[in-house]
Amino acid sequence: MMVKRNAASTRGDLLEAAFHEMHEHGTRGTSLDRILSRTGLTKGALYHHFKNKDELVLAVVDEVIGNYIQQTWVKPVMEADDPLAAMIESINRTWEDVPEEASRLGCPLNRLGQESELDSSLQEHIESVYRNWRDSLATAFSRGQKRGFVKHDVDVVGLATFLVISHQGFSSLMKCKENQAELKSASDILIRLLESYRLQN
Image (cartoon, rainbow, N blue to C red):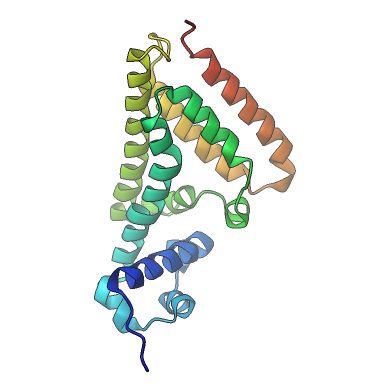
């Protein structure tokens, strides 16, 4: 008896498998055959949801990587009354359980960004993820200023940009196991910097 798969579930399985494939091999090294092998799906199923490899790659950037950043780094800060406290909590949480794939390969967005100069569409989508990340954090910090949690003289766009850049740097260096202690020390410095921006009541 053939099991009929849900269309949304099938699409999700393809995106997840494509994400891991791209993280491991980059966009140029990504193999559709390996993606299908991971999922047990047919080429017909793949092309039903994505017209080609390029469309699949862009969907991974927007829907998998972009959504992960929104859920992990943006939503907790946007929803908090005190955005600095929420950001500090997110930073501390990253050290509690670093996925093996992340510690071995670094940030997938960073990795793909190194290839984006060869593909203008990919570059535009990656830049959009970064821009939304930065702008959302800046909005949260601006709201924090109005609520009395963040000093009024803080450049919220500059702070948001600095945090995104810092995350990318940490993720890149995390691949070097010998740097773990130094990275934790740098993370503590970043937290102290954020604390210094807190408005004292």
